[in-house]
Image (cartoon, rainbow, N blue to C red):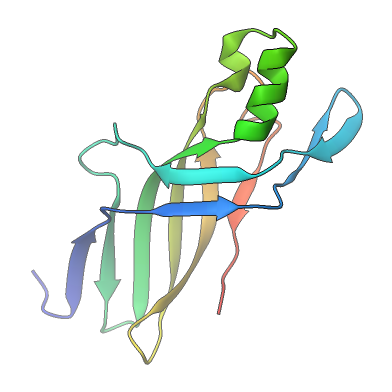
Amino acid sequence: MNQQQITFRITDLVASVPEGVPIEWQGQEFSSGPLLIELEDRAEERGNRGVLDYSQSHAEAEFHLRVQFPELAGILEDLGVDPTMTEPVHAVLRSKGTILDDHSFALSGQTKLGPHAIFTPEDTAARVLPGH
C-alpha cells in the first residue's frame, strides 16, 4: 500500500435535517418534515469506506445510508397508505473532496437512491454540497 494513501472504514454516522426538504407529489409541493440519516446496517463489505490520498490532497468515501422521514411516515400511516410508502429510503453516497490543512475534508457528491414506493430514483435527486 502507498504510504501516502490511508484507507478507512466509516463506522458511525447520524445526521438530521430538522427543516426537511421540499417534496413535490401529485402536483403539490410540501416539506418532508425532519429527516434522519444513518449508516445502513446491512451495507456490503465494500461500503462505508474511504481513502485519503495525501499525495494528491484528495479524499473519497462511500456511504451506504438509510434515510427516514418519521413525520411524513406518521401522516401517511394515519391515512392508511400501503406500508411500503413509509419505509426508509436506502441510498449510496459517493463523495470526494479536498483534504484541508487541518486534516479535515470537504466532501461532496451525488447520492444514488434505491427503489422506494414514493421516492423513485428516476424522479428524486439527493446531493451533498461541499461545506466549510
